[in-house]
Image (cartoon, rainbow, N blue to C red; front, side, top):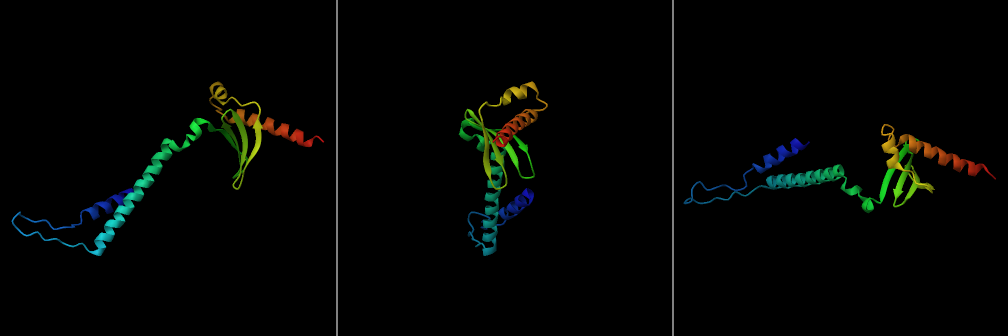
Length: 153
């Protein structure tokens, strides 16, 4: 796609807009451009601007400039998929950790953790499992505590 846009732009740039005088003493003849040529140039410039915007968006996405929310005070520490479109996500917000359920239509707070999970310590102890096992264990513990509270009269 990029090569087609580049070739089209180069082709339009090569179209003559004005005739050049062969020597300084001769008359200069201006050639008026037709509507098709002007339209082609406008389309080429529009495609160039769109390509620049797409390229800039890609660069910003790759560098992660937009992910520095609140100077690092907001971060996703882990996520577990519990269905096709459902996830349970552990979020660090300042000094608090939140367990959030995310579905296609809703985001809801499941639990506010009283004891934060030390993610950095878990990563350094067992880098092969990264965050998965520890987060899954803590999630199972939190869910079992919540179920035990729901079943007691």
